[in-house]
Image (tube, rainbow, N blue to C red; front, side, top):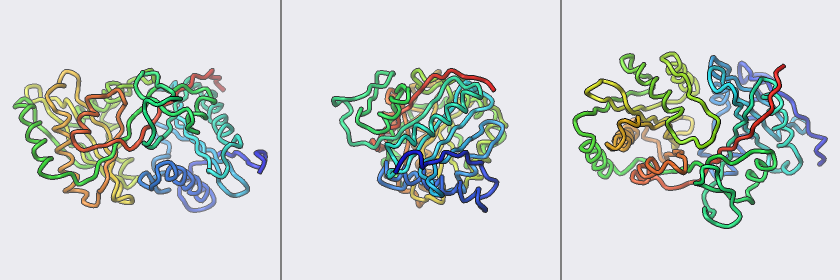
Length: 368
């Protein structure tokens, strides 16, 4: 089938999934789910069209643009561009997926070109993209592309690697995707929790909540979320500190709940000052009941070395078993160079499931 039979069209983010616009959006999401399933060999990262729609709606912080590659009425490719609106306004975040039956026909390049041109027209000077790679290859084998961080590599034979490099992207960082079975062994978890609490000593206390941060901790939690944007390893990714306040925390919480998501947060309070100095977050979607995601974990630098990260994460694993009993698999992502957090995860029972590559490309922006 010739490439010229494929049309690239912008898709609006619809108000609802009803009607032709909603049907197009649903078809685009189903294509993304298909491609992700084929990469990982399972549906653990499936996202419903309704949840994806809520996550794509424009707001004060981000705006999403969507393109479709269509063969007649059939969706065979998907391009997404996300632009942040209050910080990191130099960046565009791009995602491209093509149906396996339609690859190697230039469709991915055409979708990327649309997103890249649009990002440049909005003054963006950097594109960032991510690719997923299941475990099963030799990390130190021949014919590998090394990340700019010096830690982590990917096979040059990977189609995603070939596409990214041919499109002018550079491999900046590799993150390990890890998985552990849940619920965790309650006896082993209790032992880890007790050991970590003893190491933390009397200067720290855990505080916890579900879904919505208590008002008394809101400003402190916002400060932690802001530090999370810069205190984790980022290599040479062009990423500036985000600005978080109480309103942004409430927006994030409400958006997750609109997506039918739930969250469990454990934070650690420094008793002498009363300040929050660390936090960890779990997220769960009842539409995918067996899968739980370990999101942010951060301990401020001045308070590291007291096993606070292990303490918080072990307690949240206890709460997970109590709150979301259908959960069977927990996923997390960490930079390959983040040895401290990887060691904590290994101690808890995580093993490598795969790798996520962070790619970056510099643009020559042109404003409209």
